Image (cartoon, each protein chain N blue to C red):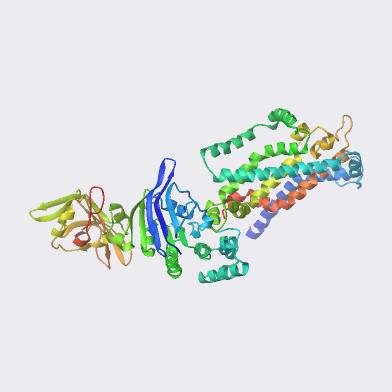
Length: 359
Length: 278
């Protein structure tokens, strides 16, 4: 186990810059998720840590050792690929034992470790099978077994769950998290799925176009996004954004959107709201009501998407369309006219550069 | 009609079709063998489908009067070397073209295929001159090089197809698990491409085995003849000894046949590999 330090890391292919000056400190034993839309450079960053991509500039250190020029095999890392990359011509046991075989671990000890790992991952019955005889989830576990058997300094995961169906993904998510809690090995986990990142990671690194947008604990990112991109990326459904500006009508402060919606503000908002060009609020922070209350905004229900425990409403008012999530049962129908109110504490303000305006 | 009865008729029909096709394919081999052991002339009428007698005299004769043993060994040397050279070169070239994709390598990949457009007859004269200058004329080694040059493009393309199918992640995984890039190639990629490798070994061996045109042009002395050239020597200006020629043809065919039987399992897997993905 070791900390992972990345200093001013750069990567470019010819004139195309993939990673632009990234610095990260990953504490020993931490589970860090790299998230971002496709093409943001998260996989490239992971592959640079693994040594599968060369470095155009900067430094990567595992523990105290700078590994810039160290080949993958000598970095003491383990990686799980999206397609598992199992050796098709080797059995489950041989797949798991391969890193030990390459490290010239004596056979007796190798067998003991492989058996131990297979038992811990519930694979003992499959030892003699070949990868093509396994289900997706089993393959995933073999890939994980091969990673943990060598007891590496760092685990690297490259979207390991994206090839699994939704149900299996949720259970494997828990398995990986449990594995990390048990082994406490520094882990870097790449995913484009923010739910995966939120549920598994100690720290999330949100990336966009080769830059780090924000680093923080999952709930920090949720509560205090640094900018509009992070605000929109973290949380599902995405945060609602309204373009517009602040108006003061006889002491009553409000945010008037370009679509004609008037969102009442409190005097505490005054300082922040003044420079705001965009107002954001998460769907779960808007309350729906069938009767008018003070400060409530009248809207029309366009679409209702029930999911059982909660329902997602797509609402319309003037030129604005936005999303609200309500838990519990309701009796609304599309076309109904309802009133919404927004919790004043839950409003986010963003300036002209899309940066969040802190309270 | 009863469906099982109908099924039986259909399968019987296909059985007969297969049998007829097999008979058409195998008849020349049968005829070749029969002619080589027949005691009478094979051109008697009606033709003897079953030999009227059995003698190995033609075989003894060709071994005594002709250097057929020598030619056989020469052919093994040429075919074996062709197979060895082209497999080794194709493995490396195909891997490079499959894994290091740049503009230059893509152009090169296509260029290799273009070289197949040139017929041997077009190249053989310059080849003759070059080989003479390099001292490769009339040498078995030289002939193997020429044969290799002709089979190599196909071998490279074939193997490249196999390497393309092997996910690069498996190789990278091997590099993380403790292999160098070269080690990952030899330990992980090559075993996975084994069916393709067998196809290339077999194909290049056979092409070296039965090649005639280059062998006729680049080899001068009878001592260095290969079987394909030797076979033509049975056709004299005025005489043609069919049974001796057929005996030589049998000797020419048998090793290739045995070789195919050995690699057949891989060959079928290899040639149809594009359809399945591990």
